[in-house]
Image 1 (cartoon, chains in turn yellow, cyan):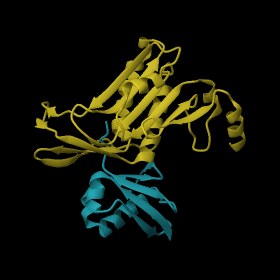
Image 2 (cartoon, one colour; image 1 turned 120 degrees about the vertical axis):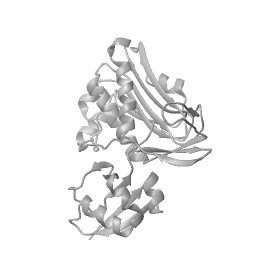
Image 3 (cartoon, chains in turn brown, orange; image 1 turned 90 degrees about the vertical axis):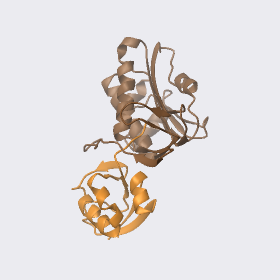
Length: 198
Length: 82
């Protein structure tokens, strides 16, 4: 693997860079969609599709994230963003003062990468993928998460890919939120139990 | 004995009263055995053990898995990001 890694460093399409725009690290892996813990698998270096996955405490800049996954060949993007809902009317109606998010950061970023890999396996036409979760104390109307997928055309599965991304994030990426309301605070817990290999 | 680090998150951290602990465990201890040990060491966690998710070195792990030496273990409730 060491030898092939050296080879990869010479390939012009291999670029790994850290963007510090948000004072948080956002890894943009260009052309590599499989991290095997020891190096990048070479077959994936032949493509040039950006993948962004990050936990950040900084404000989400949707425009910048979208620009980072837009290529010359891109003609469509599906962007999902969730925000803090101050007034919940469905089900158990209640008000929310703020949400406090926390993450097991290194595992969360690895699982975001895994979600991106799953998206690429299901929708090979997807070009760029961004999966970013903001953590910390977040108030109503504030965007908390972004899942965006780009592709050449809108009928290639980008809508479904972005939907799959947010659904999977809520299943396997270790992030939690505590809801704080005028009447008290409680941790929100999901209900998905990951299976072996997830 | 194997030395391990255990991280706690969200409700589990609140109940344990610590962000992490370090432990020496028998070499053949499984995740199931670890849960039993933690239930004894931290009675406040006993109820949580039914639904807790456990990871070994940042991958989900299940009852039969043996805990390796120098493992980074984490205990947390089902996730709720987004």
